[in-house]
Length: 281
Image 1 (spheres, rainbow, N blue to C red):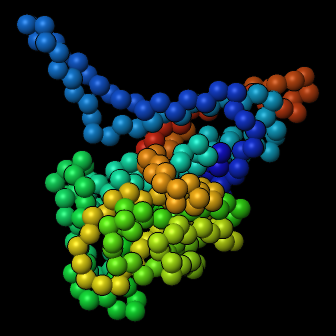
Image 2 (tube, rainbow, N blue to C red):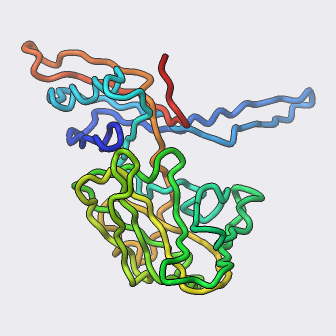
């Protein structure tokens, strides 16, 4: 996994002895006098990640220790799970939910449907005649300027729902930002009917996927995927990985013990929870 403050992610190559990432369902039951049961669940279901390692090397230990003690920044931090098959959020990957999950250039777009419910599919309406510079529709991260990445990664980006719906797409695009949120560069492909695969460039801390349209029209948004690694063959073959998200997390538990007599290796436990913000004071 990759973990750290965006712009300073470190790859932890050691396999965790244990790894749990169950969502905090928060379901409450109410039982009527007649015996019937009603349940209530909050709209947000944050996951809690519990990881432990045995005999971890000191370089990785020092990195996790600094994160747990918030030495370099107050947080939140990023934890990029290699098991996540789609870094987009669940509703966003399915083309559903609030229009706040996307942004666009000027007033060129209207998203119909998702503003009414998280479960209603969005329809994309391009309202104005496009120019050579767009309009562009961006898939936004809920916390940062983009999805946390690090040089050395490869990412795949595609919008199979829009392609299947016949949308007038001219390009797929990925904006690369540095740790301060400044735009470094933009990767593009003029072949949006197939997935876009790109290595993360030097200095990049965030990636923001986008699609550029070439005509006015109305199309169902459908599914989209932003993944780690080259998953283009699987996507073209018809796989549509559900969005698992890559949310900001905060360290809520930390254990640190020597794994041998000379202290060269450590047994580490780490508890994380998905957050909307993190504060100290």
